[in-house]
Image (cartoon, rainbow, N blue to C red; front, side, top):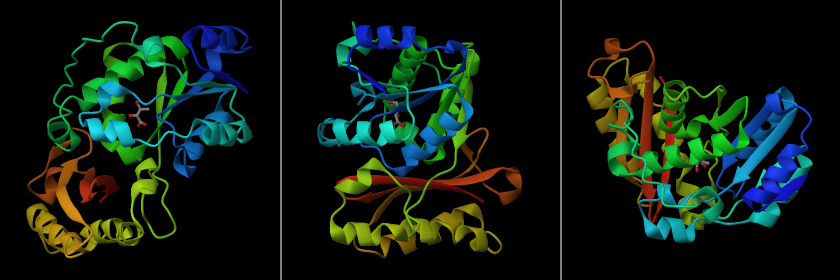
Length: 278
Ligand code: PAF
């Protein structure tokens, strides 16, 4: 496995790959956990070569403290990736990805109107900036993304089609801890009490499957919010019940055949997101 820490090192390593038309790509911001490794395993199983990027992308952080405290564990990450059969780890410097300021502003076609979009202004624009830049460099045939970031996957799929990238996005299931908490690099930032409380989020949102039999989507959201907030470690920022294709909230269950619930909950200052199909 080659660890390329600059664009020049990456270009040299990439040049030596035998099957450049069959590259699987897993973009990450590091602090890898089993969720990431499951994406890597999908890629290694499907593609001749697997490239993983580790880059904490400054343009997608709308909160400076979140960027400053984002866990950085390159050495441990590389050990995990080596065991998983990765060909190249691309861990570039900011200057390699943004030799000059990226001023591109993307129209998301309304996919950022709800969920994380209004709560993290500029976040998805930064994600599209970095992902398109990485796609241009890595030129993958397949790119693997976890569905924990459900809205991110939808937005990236949209731009792959809109900008005509010759690659396929492979969405991968959320990987959870045994107690149901969605795996996330941010989980390492939780205090012991918060970590104990956090599985309450998934346990509670799963109740929507039952509640929908007797409640409207709005009533369901109100009930779930009340139940999550009853735990003193947790504070719901939002719960939305949406059509999973248009990513817009539904008023009646019959408004969509592909219903998804997504949420963000604070275990302050950590912000946890999750989603389930209903
Ligand atoms: O999901 C992430 O970790 C990031 O948003 C991504 C896709 C690696 C872009 O920085």
